[in-house]
Length: 407
Image 1 (cartoon, helix red, strand yellow):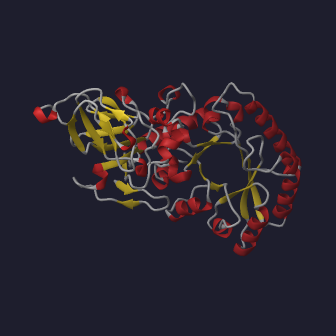
Image 2: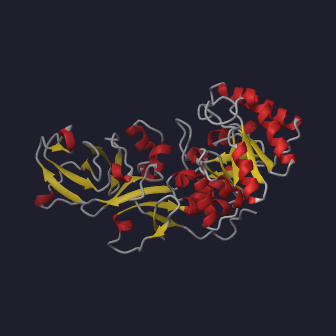
Image 3: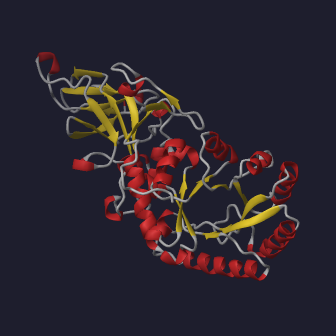
């Protein structure tokens, strides 16, 4: 099945010989998602897995990915915004679900009404309590502490006060402190000492909370890199984002080396193929010129589709060979230099041939990491920025018999 992708709006697109999904698509292998969840669940056991499906599941499609992850054994789902959580509830997903990034305009009442767990760094507490009073049901709260990342979370100095206030509201029946959590800053760089420092601080705040009478269902600190490399950070629950999409968080380690399978393949069709003379300039700015008589292939994707404009040199695989993008990437298109083919005199044209920007890297094919290097960024950004103009096409939607479930 193919879907036009938009956060909170997954719309079917007819599969036809001339449909948009055949012109360009992001193919999402849900079996790869299931494999990755089962793998990280085995690594993290006995801790449970929270599948992080924020940002439309890192561009993979929140609802299909959430369902596949739960089928494979994830016990929790995690998102940034309450609006993302509400979209999952609207799709009929009833699993435990945490949203942790809010503004004063966030819809806390809707979250409480939908049974969504709410991350709380301090300022949100009064708004959460007000929502609980409005809905006449206790809110489920995860208290967040900043152990060193310097973003969200209560400071260590404010922690005791936050815990005390939350417990007063819990005693009044207005909320339940379900979880305590923090986030790691440099777990993707295992040699750095800051992870040890954050872990030590987290253990200290847990002790403070325990002394105050908090008995949380889950304590969670580990992200994907910590899940894969630091079992001492696992506690009751690990939050896995990048890993369930089959990408590596570590420089120099491939997904395969970590037991992961990339789930997204971005592909299109070559839309033009023509011979040009030596010295032909290519694309805006004419920063590239052909070294000799050559054949250019036009790839109908650009920065409006989420391909980074700065990623000249990114690989495109056509007919079993990787060709670097030459010249500037434009809004809707980019160019590869195929070398001298002499299409006009009977040489092989690649018009209409499949062009793969990135996938699982099998047989030397291009990967999201290749594009990240070309763009000077990280693989997270490459997959999350693939735009809604690129339809998502899901394969292996049905769970294979005997794979197990969320249980």
